[in-house]
Each structure stands twice: as structure tokens, then as C-alpha cells.
Length: 58
Image (cartoon, helix red, strand yellow):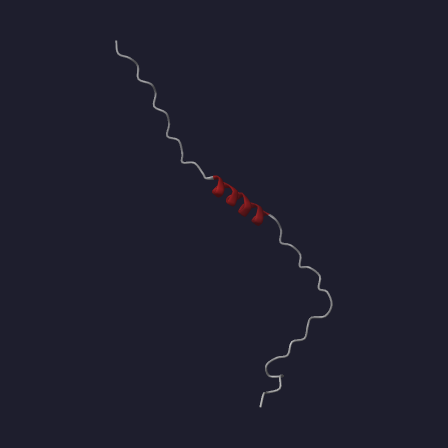
């Protein structure tokens, strides 16, 4: 009588690092939320002089 061989275990899939898991969760959270509305403006925009409008140095 021969001894019965134990059944081989199925191959275990490679694990995922905690860093990769957290990064994928953060990415999924970022793309699943609607974009934020722009913040309201406060007062008039600052006026900046264009190069053509500035006086030229002598």
C-alpha cells in the first residue's frame, strides 16, 4: 500500500503592496468625484501693463 500524496495547493497570486493599494484608492476617489466649482472672484482683476504700453527707456 502506498501513502496518498497530499493535494498540491493552488498557486497564490502575487500580493499588492499597501502603497499601491492606497494609491489606487486615492486615484479612484479623485476620478469619482465631480469637479469643484470655481471660487467666486473678489473684486476687479488687477490691471497689468503690456510691454507695448510701457514707456521705453532712453
